[in-house]
Length: 157
Image (cartoon, rainbow, N blue to C red; front, side, top):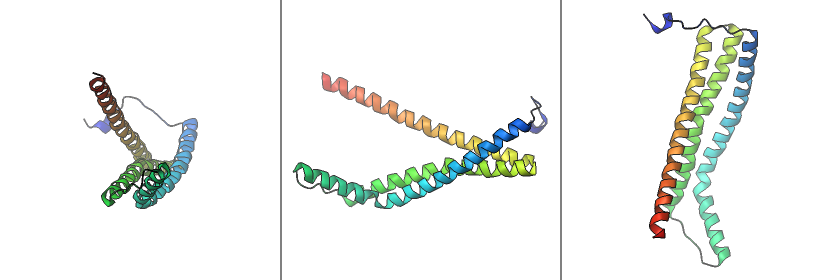
């Protein structure tokens, strides 16, 4: 028996649920458009991030009177790549939310079950992506705390 033929619940989207989904789609579309703008700005900033960081460090070291700090060109590229990576990572959930919103609006207009399911698939993908990124971020925090505590213990003795 296929998964499609098994129904645990006979759920239907009533008028109130349709209104909530329509509002969620409108807000999702708004947030995704703002997200695309910020991803684009971050990508543009990544092209100049290394140079900006290098100039800032040079001016800060000049204010302290300790001479200039020359950052290598490779380090500038690493900083630029880091910002470009962040932009690429943010692009995925923004794209999923945009797809959710546009497909949800189309599904509600045309009463199309396939578009509705596809919309929910994109919403699920957005949450899954953000969940995985949260787990990775929390893992880095936990590792930093463990390393910090280890350094504290070793340095204290």
